[in-house]
Length: 68
Image (cartoon, rainbow, N blue to C red; front, side, top):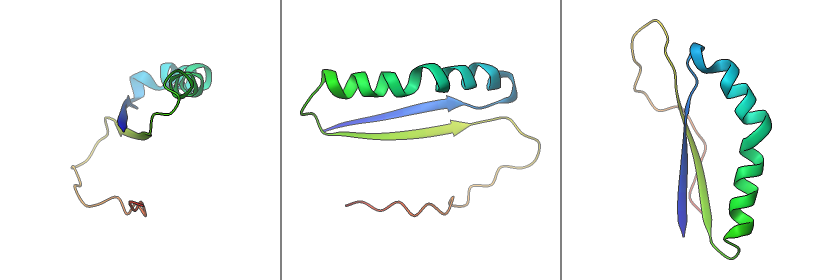
């Protein structure tokens, strides 16, 4: 099993680059990886971070993810 986590800088200064990356590359890259490693069990995750005014809130995000 391979766990792959993609960390995304979604700060204001990266918005245009992020839009381009997502539109042009991310789906192709992930699909190519799965094809190249046929038979491998992948789990994908995405983590994003950004700059914003205010205090940090460390409460859970409310995800409904559950392990199968």
